[in-house]
Length: 236
Ligand SMILES: NC(=O)c1ccc[n+]([C@@H]2O[C@H](COP(=O)([O-])OP(=O)(O)OC[C@H]3O[C@@H](n4cnc5c(N)ncnc54)[C@H](OP(=O)(O)O)[C@@H]3O)[C@@H](O)[C@H]2O)c1
Image (cartoon, rainbow, N blue to C red; front, side, top):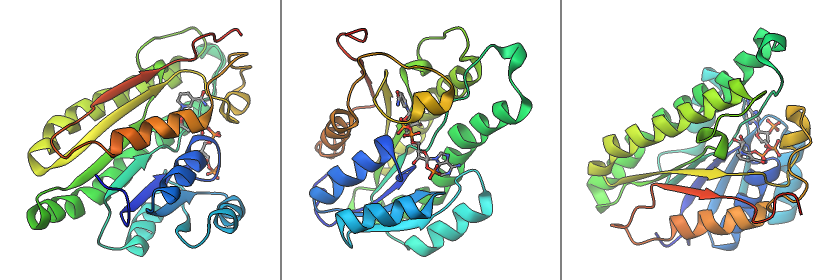
């Protein structure tokens, strides 16, 4: 896909990976709708990137807010990057119900709400132009490998990879690509918010963004359905 002039929706665009995706895609000439709860962060990104970045305040775990956000975005969406996500790490016996629920609601149910909103639009684009669009789900290496103290997060990211693979098979005949991206540790605010130290020598968000741009720019009949990336030397 030539990203120039395309309409891209990124969830969790106010920080970390989502902000890096927004920067990379605006630089490619896309119009980027950035969803997140912290509107002031989105407005600061707009100030930095210009009018090609459109802030949309939205909690992806709230069905009504997602419906309002997509109604505002309009009838054309070429790319959806389901990136909003969080971890709440710790031993399972100490996990509060709201910590479990926040991970399920954001990392899985939010993806469901946003993906369901774009499928009819992408199907219509396929009927008109012969190519529907691209849905990129930001999973994690925690969707491939289970580890102590991240069981709930593991459950959401394993689930997201299963969702992506099933959806890839469901939508390919409609000219819609689905890709699952599985990074290891990236330097963002994620680890601290999750209650972990993270790897001492993580990857950079810009490097993940460059890979996502590469995935999106592939020829129409070329689908990279899953990518795993890791720091070469996570301990430095
Ligand atoms: N960093 C890593 O090491 C790593 C590794 C593998 C995978 N990932 C995945 O990468 C994705 C992005 O994480 P990150 O590292 O960029 O973390 P981050 O810096 O903490 O950013 C998380 C983003 O998600 C948004 N978000 C969280 N809950 C939301 C909600 N209910 N509705 C809308 N937006 C919401 C946050 O915005 P607001 O708070 O403004 O809503 C923020 O923009 C996540 O899915 C994460 O699981 C991260």
